[in-house]
Length: 541
Ligand SMILES: [Zn+2]
Image 1 (tube, helix red, strand yellow):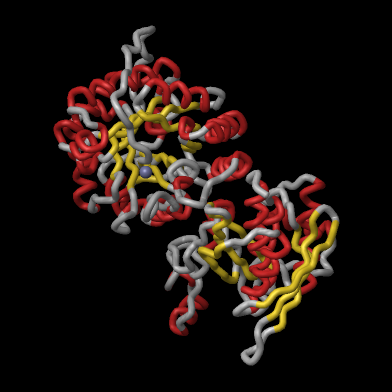
Image 2 (cartoon, helix red, strand yellow; image 1 turned 90 degrees about the vertical axis):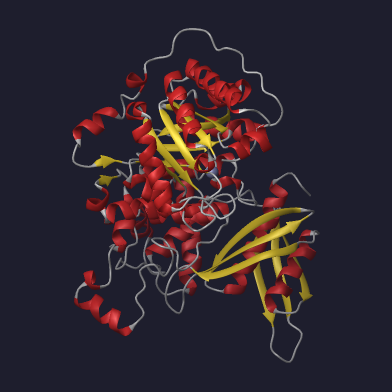
């Protein structure tokens, strides 16, 4: 959970009509449970757009949030936490847009346990098909004494009043006992019981600081279920952070011990060491379904595409050895393993790459493939593009196909993502030349286009990429400090498409940029220009 609560809070009695009984407000969940008595359904609550977005430099604009939310709906998550509406007017608008336009999942907005936050959260989610207000307040003594400066009783009272207040607006109210894993057990039980009584439909027991250990956290969930019978009437949720690398393990231990909702993020992005990673939770439950006696209803074939999209829009690269979605997750390199895989995939593979949307042997496109073939392929991959979008993709496709013999599905996905997630371009990359070697000072010349006018400049640097960056800074008339530079092959083969991601500090703020090309220097140049375009798109310059 994110921000704290400052100063005293005055939450007056909600009054008004009585809240709806808990059972009724769960009508979307209860039939599911009755149907499948054999295996419990685990609800997947995605908080990529809220907890995930709190990563410095990963801020998303409204359009990007909508794009990710739409993809999360295709992935089939049960709940999308779209933001923390009171944190900024932009976030309020972004959550409103998601609530109005994304159909399928519950759309949740986060609020501290104060009236003003709850008012704004409701403003944000009220037009959703299925809105949820998610209220949180600290429950550990550390949080109560050091952060909130209040005693247990008054915090309990505030929690109850907040749930009642939210319940006046919204049937579906989630209550989070922040820092639950470090809270006094009996007090935690009392808070949970009182909040259910007040109308909460989901109770979340977060490991806010990533302190829990799997056995202990699983035991906490089991004990809560035993001590608070009212939990049977609501959904019991968990939310784990990865400070000790245990977010997924803790979440799974909780599922095993009776949790029914898991809060997680794509690629495990999130504050500090991140949140539990959605893809790992979902594929662990699916791969070991009989062990958990549980299932999710996600369309796992959308996992890979979602992962790529989040990585690209947040400019957070995925480590190659990342489980499920890393570029090496399904690469078998040892001879013995390869031999086994060729004889029977089950020898060394527990998940088929196709199951998470990685197509291994797909048809390849070349520069000679026509527009119809390209369109057909895009549709096969699930992209429905407008004519205008298709034109852009086609143009970039020809450009890449000129230099790369075969265009794979992954190449194509990358091209589409780049073309459709552009910021408005103040400067467009046109061309570059570099000269370098171990006996000369590297020299580069770059041409960018601004308002249909070509601008060329030349510069030296301590390497060809550095020389290109210096050229770009001269052309745009701003200097940047490179904070992070990541280069990787996003596709396989000698002529793979290279993807460069940069984080550049410009006038004290960090801007991310991304660029793709079969030529790594060009990919780097495009990424650098992209970062400056974000700077200009932010109203600078
Ligand atoms: Zn969190």
